[in-house]
Image (cartoon, rainbow, N blue to C red; front, side, top):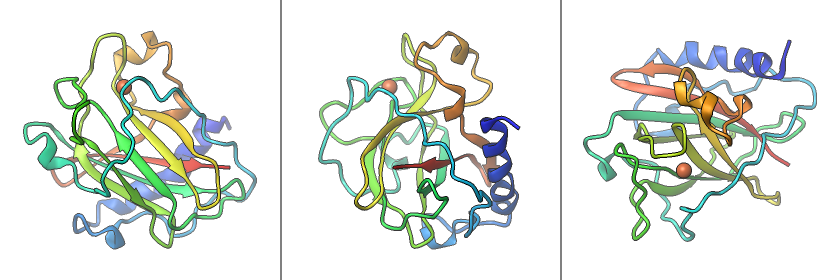
Length: 194
Ligand SMILES: [Fe+2]
């Protein structure tokens, strides 16, 4: 089984559970598996370029939906694990992305923020579907750092985007597992960090 197939299998149970209904934005109610099913040492999540639009000192913020009221709601959920598959509590997860029109806020902090994982290594952001801008496929930017660990800078991608194949930065190992939750598109990803 390929690495990607294996990871998809790991997240399948999480997607199955999400349909039970969760209260937003209460992180404690996120239906992700409390214990990941990976048992062996896993490959590190691929690092990717930060790009030109990173801003430091972002606010602690889990809900970006007011930053782009006309955007299509999107729920980004995930897990942060170490290479021994141990969930990482209080890991930093920073998210920034283009708005639904493909523009970054380079003056303020619209669609930018960071949170920390819960005791089970889980996180979730309520945001909107990023728009596409020239030269790139649809993507999120993230930084992930477990306590005492290195900062992982990377990006996440959407399956079945026709522009993926033409994007020189895109990597299939960074595809989210998509589903739906209520009126929201849902994307899930499991980060493995050093
Ligand atoms: Fe970007």
